[in-house]
Picture 1 (cartoon, rainbow, N blue to C red):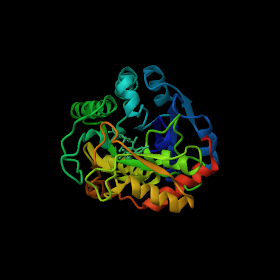
Picture 2 (cartoon, rainbow, N blue to C red):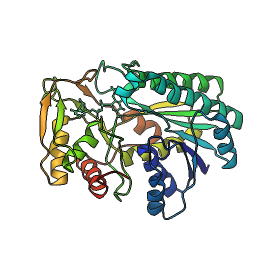
Picture 3 (tube, helix red, strand yellow):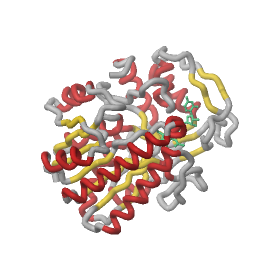
Picture 4 (spheres, rainbow, N blue to C red):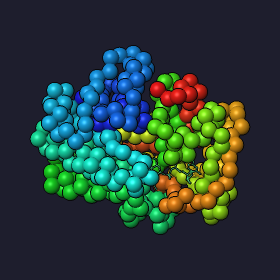
Length: 335
Ligand code: UD1
């Protein structure tokens, strides 16, 4: 197996996965409409890989172009990253989320059926666990959703399970990411949010760079070790490597869903303090009311991924902060 189509391959996780695939001897091809990513990503990947980068500008909802791309490049597998992921935006514009994420995936599945691709890896999220009932969260935890973005991930997962049942030749790995952080060690690629970041790590990083005055800490009265929200942050390079492990295992497996997390929970204040150390600069913060829809704690039981695909996160929180900062300081305005 060699040629792999990466839908949304120019995005944060897609671009990091591109490098890992390339370094493992695969031939990754990016399929992206660049609505939420910049074309400069291609130049950066080219520098890192010291090679021309193959990419197609196309929309996930364009089934004809998808099919043509799969055939042109003779792709044997697809890693499906393409999708929108901002929770707040999904509440105000659910149409965008159902169209891009759900309709887009239906188009991709039709293209897969028509071309005979037999392997699919899907970018899911810990959001499919809804409000945690117990911790750490394993894959048997009940699934639910608390917002339209989460619902699109959940519906896509359900759809994929139906496809896997109906078409046993199609092997599917659903990867449930916890909270991705950090950047490639080169500092050439990283997370480049449009506008004000919603997520903690890019926000902290922009405060460290002096682009924003302080971090708003959403709630300090949770039942956690310091009152602030606890999450399972995972280095994006570890996450990227998880895709290759899953892909390599798909030949021997029936379809699977696995958590990609570290199993360790860190609080908002842990992040601010560790980032301060990594960046060598003070990070001002202010405690504010809880953010609507947030939970106190969410972290993975990652043992199934270790058992089934032989994957385990290797990078710690300090490395995530250091690499995130390295990218931020070299690219203060993103790409
Ligand atoms: C959210 C999404 C998740 C998605 C993830 C990464 C939900 C409920 N959450 O996770 O699906 O995969 O983003 O895109 O669907 N915080 C602050 N100040 C900030 C920003 C965040 O204090 O400026 C706190 C939050 O209250 C939370 C923690 O930091 O306790 C992490 O927040 P965030 O980075 O947004 O991730 P999640 O909400 O866990």
